[in-house]
Each structure stands twice: as C-alpha cells, then as structure tokens.
Length: 602
Ligand SMILES: Nc1nc2c(ncn2[C@@H]2O[C@H](COP(=O)(O)OP(=O)(O)OP(=O)(O)O)[C@@H](O)[C@H]2O)c(=O)[nH]1
Image 1 (spheres, rainbow, N blue to C red):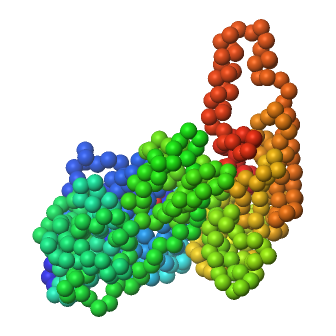
Image 2: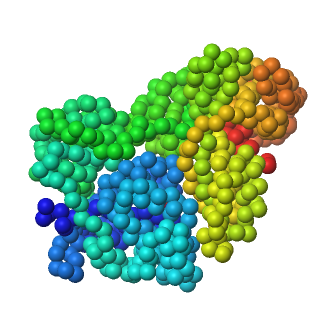
Image 3: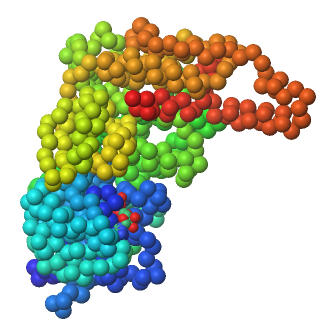
C-alpha cells in the first residue's frame, strides 16, 4: 500500500526528566504545523497538574507533517506515553500502536532505571529503537559515555544516535531525518477486516467518549457499526478524524493510520485501553494481543472531611472516573469516618493525583485512610479472599495464611551508595537478586520487595539516600505467603477503624509504638485523659496517654485585650473545623497522613 510508505508512527520514551516533553515540543515546532506563538510550553502535557509536577499522565497524540530531504511529505503520528511506573500498562499499549520509538537519554545522566523499563516495553512490542542523546548544550554532557551505556545495556547500535538539545533546538533536523529513514512504515492490509487498537480514550462533553486508535488492518468510516472485542458491545461511528492537533474530522481511517473515533460511547470504562475495535458485520476473528483488565494495585478510603457532604464527593469522583478508566471507587462505610468510598489506583502517584484534583478542581476537602495493597487471604476452608481494606480482614481464627504482592525492582545508583541502598532494601524486607555494573561508576541492583513496602515512600527514601541520583523501576511479579497481622488503634478504648493497617509481624511492635507516639503529639488535650493504644488482635502492644488539660484557653490572657481573646477563640474554632470526632475524642485530620510517615523515624 503506497500511502503507508509515508507514515511514521512513533513514541518518545525516556526516563523522567530526560527531556521527552521538551523534545516533543521541538519536533512539533520543527514540523511546522503549530505556529511558534501558539506553542504553549510542553504542548503534549495538557493538564495543569501535570505541568506543575512535570510528569506526563494522560496520553496525547499529535499528527504532524514533515517535509523530508528526499522531497516527500511524511505524516508523523507522535504518540505520547505517560512517564511513570504507575502507568506501565498504558505505556505498553501506546507503544503497541507504533512501529518505532525515539529513546531519549539525557547525556548528562546516562541510562537510568526507567530508560531500561521503557526499552523493555518497546522491545516487547518489536519496535525499532532510535536512540538520541539530549541536553548536549550542557557542559556536563558526556554523549560518548552515554552512547556506550546504551550499547552495553540495551545492545543496540548508538554510533549514529543524534546529539540534540531539545531546549536549544540543536540537532532536531538530523533526528527528524533519522525518524524517516530508520523507523519502519506501517504495513497493514487496507482490504483486510478492521482491526484497530484502542490506546487511549477521553471523555468529551460534546462528543461523549473519544477513543484513540491505531488501525492495523481495514478501514473505518462514519456510519459503520463497530464492535469492541473485549465486551462485544456495538456502537455506531459518528465521527472519525486525526489529531492535528485537536480533533480534525476525516472521511475514514485506514490501515496504518492513527486517529480518533467517536461512537456515542457513554463511559470511558466501556472503551478500555488495549481493546480491539472491529466491524460488527465483518469482524476479524482474532483480537490484537496484549489486552489486560487494569488491576488496581493500591487502595484507600476517601471520606468527606467534616463539613463536606457525601454527595458532592460522589459527584466529583464520578466526574474523575469518566476520564480515567483506571480509577475505581465504590461506597464504603467506616465506623470512624462515616460514609465514604473505597478507591482503587494504579499506584501511589495516581492516588495522590486524584486526591489533589478533588481538592483543587472540585474544592472538596477529604480524609484519606492508609493506602493498602491487595492481600490474598487463604481461609482455613480453602477459599480465597482478596482484601484491599484492612478493616475487612477476617478473624484470625478463620485465616490459614495471608499472601502479599511482591514486585521486582531495578534500582540504578552510583556505586558509592550501594551500601545505603542495600540497607534500605533490607529494612523493607527486600531480597537481593543480583547486581550489574552499568559502568565502572554505576550499578543496577535487582531486588524483590513487598509492594506494601514500596508504596509509601520508598522512592523518596531512595532519592534522599542517593542525593537524587538513584532511579527506580518495578513491576508486579507474584503473591507470596507472609507473616502479616492487622494493627489496630484504639482511642479512649474505642477502635478507630480508619487507622487499621496490615503490617509484617516483625514490625508490628515498632510500628504500633510509632503510631501511638505520633498520635500523642497530634491529638490535642481534652477535658479528660485520652489513652491511645495499638493492638494486634486482643493484645495491646503500645500505649501513650494524652493528659487532660485544666485551664480554659482564654484564661491565659486574663485582663488582656478583647481582640486577642477573639483571635484565640477563632483559632480554636478554625482548629475544630479540621477535627474529626471519634467517640468523645477529637482528632485533627493531619493525623491520618502523619501515622503513615513511618520512615521519617527509621
Ligand atoms: N539544558 C537542557 N535542559 C533540557 C533539555 N531538554 C529538556 N531540558 C530540561 O529538563 C527538564 C525535564 O524536561 P521535560 O521535557 O519536562 O522532561 P520529560 O522527560 O518530559 O519529563 P516527564 O514528563 O516528567 O517524563 C526541564 O527542566 C527541561 O527544561 C536540553 O536539551 N538542555
């Protein structure tokens, strides 16, 4: 098929901060479709939050036209991939839509953990990898060394890898030419049965769900009846088009194309990433490989903060979900916190983003309970329960054993930090699998770690112990039997379920003590004494007491001027607003996050 000769479908992959977004901007600019003055910094990252955090979450795809030195015009479909380990599945599906990937390596840093993580994903999809060295404008750039790392670690030729500065716009022409020359053109069968891969979907207020697809075989037109193969649901196509950028309607999409389809699909979760689209009256027999139901790895409870109502939070969560098929929630009640929601996330970053959006975009204040991974509980009668809320852990007498998710982690660090990182991993119940030298100065350490130990702040600890030079990539590998117990917190002798957590038996005592000490610092004095206890089953393993206060807060400024009194009272009131009442005990909201910051203490 001749037209396919002039199409190049590719992604840019990189370790975080190596300059993927900046390079994408530069490519867009150099292909000339977007006028310079219309270029917002980082064109592809379109959410404010993303821009602030500097990470790519939601995929954006752009169709560009490039006039090559051979005189021909080429269509480039630049498919953006999210740059964080939480979103690996989305990365792998957007790569599956491409023939090649531009691998950006920061020439001042060299190959890092997620460079490798992304490269493995690209190799799994049989992509042509086109390495390029970025940030060569910096004096500390060492492109030759970085090239050698690429050759040694990835096993691809990096001799001709373009040296670019995305920031200064150096070397971009050479890169564009190499994209034309080295990334293969698509080679689908336009006359075959429709086979298209959904690699992203978004909700649009006017059009409903817009699905982004790569057509492998066949043609799709307005009016066609399409079928999504994982659900067998049918929809009539109302619009097809390309992202040029923005939605530009077209007559059809055919083999080799990347574009969008609107088909009055109501919810993003009905059009799952990884699913195959075919025609209902002439379907392909076989779906494209690689479809997976997304599994939430981390769960937590989200509750309206005092003063907030249940309904607005529910509405907001529903709105967030229309656009995010990986985010799950269902109603849940907690004796301590009342009516709220159990929410599932891809990882901790995903969770933080949702909570932040609730606060920022919806102006809601919420309480989140300890994040938890999903435990596999094998009961004495042989049945298995998946538990994602510590409160629901069955009675220990009914449990035969508990299994927890284990991940394989690749940690890349300068060699002088090996000791510190091994110690960190040891503390987190890690099992070392091995260590490779990347260069004489840098190593790649492989560990198996319980996911539970990674989700809280492992990454922060890694960064601080390596002065920012460490990088991490991990993937789930299996469930493993482990000695886990439920740690409960009692305030004034009453169990506060929102504080319950599942911990390793060997850590229960220390953890219990930490939680009690922390709560003692945070819970204000009451008219009565407040005992704080940590317990495993019936056994109290740690205890602290918040003493009762004697004086009224105003008594302090007796005779003082009235405005000062007012201020104090107001401050007290303000403080009250952010309190949660448990029985007779008032607990400030910060307590819920403070008890998680265990590692500050280690
Ligand atoms: N000096 C210099 N800085 C660069 C260059 N390219 C990117 N940067 C800077 O490096 C930082 C990271 O660049 P981004 O483009 O945001 O990196 P990214 O890989 O897209 O990051 P994620 O979206 O988080 O994956 C930014 O501060 C850029 O300004 C370059 O060629 N030279």
